[in-house]
Length: 105
Image (tube, rainbow, N blue to C red):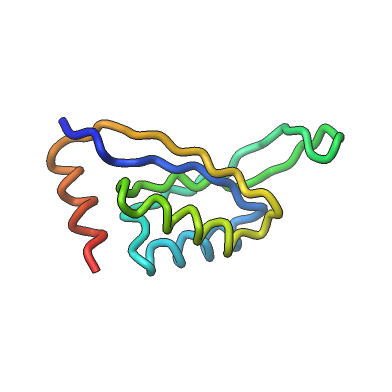
């Protein structure tokens, strides 16, 4: 098992925005794979309790792409303050090799 892949979570307001962001990240080779799913979110925003439907992006990348990926999310995102949560994960050797080979320019 290898431990230097990174999972990044962010959300977008709708499917169109989520797909646009995913396509930019994939097209710029900042992510090897991005999964989208519809979620219901509850959160505090500017002193108010909010409840909304969003699309969550689960982004698979590497440590060396993380900083550029985060910059791109901040630049392209439709929210003033996008959720960007990330953590290091283990993977099979084969999946690790696929992610790395997918991100070569």
